[in-house]
Image (cartoon, rainbow, N blue to C red; front, side):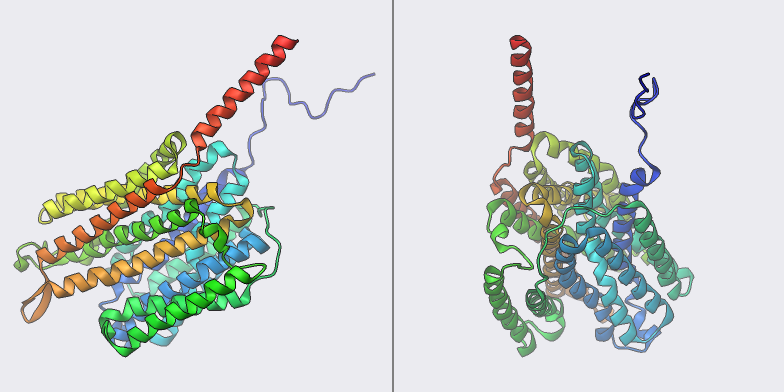
Amino acid sequence: MDQPALTSPPPGTGTPAPRLRDRLTIPVLASGGILMAVTQTVVVPLLPDLPRLTGASAAAVSWTVTATLLSGAVLTPVLGRAGDMYGKRRVLIAALALMTVGSVMCALSSDIGVLIAARALQGAAASVVPLSISILRDELPPERRGSAVALMSSTVGIGAALGLPLAALVVQYADWHTMFWLTSALGAAGGAATWWAVKESPVREPGRFDVLGALGLAAGLVCLLLGVSQGGTWGWGSARVLGLFLGAVVVLALWWWQQLRTAHPLVDLRLVSRPRVGLSHVAALLAGFAFYANSLVTAQLVQAPKSTGYGLGLSIVDSGLCLLPGGVTMLLFSPLSARISAARGPRITLALGAAVIAGGYALRIADSRDLWMIILGASVVTTGTTLAYSALPTLILRAVPAAQTASANGVNVLMRTIGQAVSSAAVAAVLVHHSSPLGGVPVPTLHGYRLAFAMAGVIALAACAAALCIPADGGAGTTRRARRATRGARDEAMEGA
C-alpha cells in the first residue's frame, strides 16, 4: 500500500512560515548598526564638560573622538577580511563585544587615559555595518536583498540622529556615566541577539591572514588620519603634521607594493583597480565628506548666540532634536533607494543622492537664519545621503566575488571615514578663518558657514560626477533579458511538444 509523501504540506497550508529567528535577522542586524552609530556619537555633547569632569586638558579630551576614529578606520578593513576568512557572524559578535567592553570601561572610570583606551575599543564597532551587509548578501534571496542593504546603510544616520539628543538629555539631567551604562546594556543585548538570530554565513575565502598587510595599513592610516584630525591644533605647517603626512605616503606606498605581491592580501588591490570598484570607493570618499559637513555645522549654527545676528541660541538638547527629522528621513527613504536601484541601477541612485545633497546645501546657503529652513535644508542633505549611502554597498556587492564582500565593503566604509575626517578638518579650517570676536571669543560668521556649505555642495557634485562615470553593470536590464530568454525557451519547448 502506498504511503503518503511526508514532505507534502497539508492542503491549503502553502509554504511553511519562516522561523522567528529568520524573521528577526534584518531587525537585529539593523539595531546593531544603529547602536554602533549611537556609541560613536554620544560623547560629542559631553566634550565641552569633559575637561572639568576628568581634570584633563581640552586637547587630551579631544582624543576620546580621535581614538574612535583611528581605531575604526584601521579595524574596519581588518575585521572585514577576518569575516571573509573565519566567519562574518563570529567576527560581528566579536566587534559588538569589544564595543560593549569599551562602554563598560567608560562607565566605570573618569580617568582620561582609560576613557581614550575605551573609546579606541569602541571603534571596532565601525565594522558592524559592512559585516552585516555581507551577511545579508549571503543569507537573503535577491528580491529581499536590496531593501535590507538599503536599511542597513541608513542605520548610520539614524543612530547618529538618535545618539546626539539622547546624550544631550543624559548630560543635562543625569550623571554622564549613565550614558555609557546604557550603551553597555544595549551592546550586550545586541551581541546576544546576534548570536541567537543570525546564522553563520557558509561563504568563506580560505587563506592565511595577512598580518604584515594589516600592520602596514594600520600604520599608514594612523599617520594620515592623525595628521588630518590634529592639523588644526598642531598647525598644518608644523613638523609633526608634515612628518605624519610624509610617513603616511611612504608607508601606504610600501603597503600597496606589498599587497600586490602577496598571495593572500588583506585588500585585493586588483579589484580596486576595476573602475566599478575603484570609482565606487572614490564616490564614497566624496559622499562621506559632503554628508559630514551637515552634521558638524548644524548643531553649531543653531547653538550660536542670538547676538551674532544669525544664531538661535538653542540648548544642547534642542540642537540635538533638530537632527531627529534627518534620522526619520533616512528610515523612510531607504526603501525608495532600493526601488530606484532595482529599476535604474545603484550608480544612478548614487548620482541622484549626491545631487540631492548638493541641493540641500543650496537651501542652507539661501537661508540659515530661520529654524524651519535650517531643519529643511539639513533633512534634504540627509535624504540625499540616504540614497547615496544605500547605493554604495549595492555597487560593491555587484562588483566583487561573494567571498570578498566583507573586506570590500570594509574598504568602502573606510573611504567614507577618511572623507568624514577630511571634512571635519576642512570645515573647522573654514570656520576658524572666517570668525569674528564676540565678547572676546572668536565666533564663526554666517559667511563662514555659507562657505562651508558651498564647499560641501561642490564635493557632492564631484561625487555625482564620479557616480556617473561608474560603468553600468546592467543589473536590471540583465534580469529582464534573462526573463525574456526563459520565456523564449519555455515557448520553444511547448511548441516542440
